[in-house]
Image: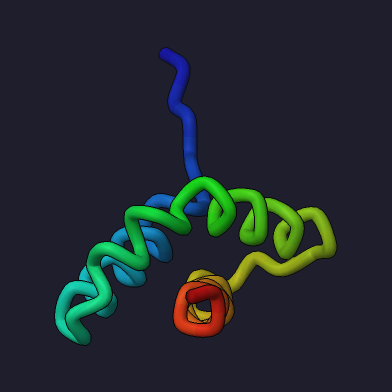
Length: 65
């Protein structure tokens, strides 16, 4: 049995929900490819905390208009 764990699933879903609550769902959808790349870079630099990835990702989407 092969199980794949994706560290980005929870942070991305949390960011999506937060953006929708703030009325920025369109921003999230537009920035999703760049957000994934940004989060991959953070993980490559050693970040593994889902909470920090969520906060950093939300800040990224918020700044990127």
